[in-house]
Length: 116
Image (cartoon, rainbow, N blue to C red; front, side, top):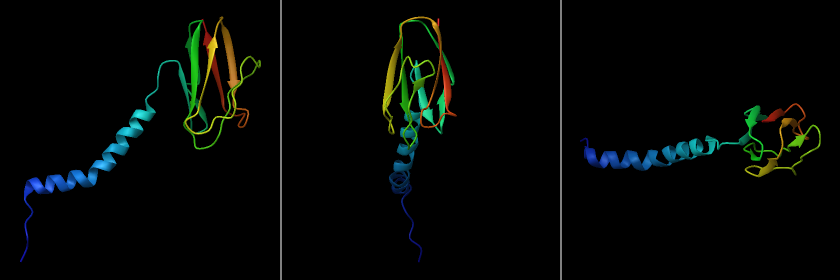
């Protein structure tokens, strides 16, 4: 003899089973969102690679990789400590110029801040 489950009960069961998965997907989506004037470090890249900002802007780098990274200006005008996962570093660009930077631990990782 086959037992049938009430459709509303089935919906509750499905919601209970899929709820954590949907929540994890939403949490990842929230993490992937990027604030203005923010550079995300993920998958051994700085994104965006080039960022243009007005003078006086504070730029924030956030490490979403599972290993440490640093942010070092090629002209040595700014330098972060090693950033662990979800750590951040901020620097205020007071005057115009083009500022190239790289990760001191992974020099192939590069980026540029253009200040107008």
